[in-house]
Image 1 (tube, rainbow, N blue to C red):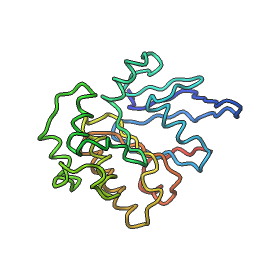
Image 2: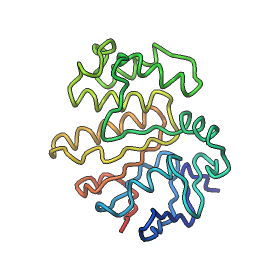
Image 3: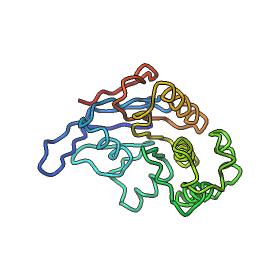
Image 4: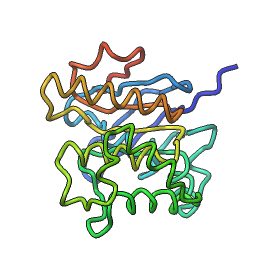
Length: 213
């Protein structure tokens, strides 16, 4: 019997003074890397926020790893999100006065996990950041910041890894490189990758795509 990592039912959301958005039902199995494809204004970010527990739907249900997010209090939802969901946003959002190592240690602590320096070094090495562990965000290039955000997101081996428009401003070569990296790091961490994007270039790389209109 199917036991999807992500499933949604009859999700709707409405911003003040705006038309209600109805979303398609989603079902994603473990390891089934998936694309949410849609143009600007199609509701991609809204859906991402609901899947990640950052906002609650008007109607419907979101289940992640068999947990109905609607049944969790705000505090429990924060804890669940830090343990089971990893976010890769367009901007790295690293804490500026902490080193790269300290930023990733903090991600482990906030998830209630024991800090694993060896595990952090392994992830940084895989992302070619092992020589930058003591660098501050201001000392990292844009590409290094992007990889640092990936490292922080996967360090807790989340069941679901969500990337928001990771290839939006990249040329074809860098798009291929980043996509290959995301798929590789998700497989290594045992995470299911979900990408939201308007970038139709990467559609053929995914076995499952949901179109948002």
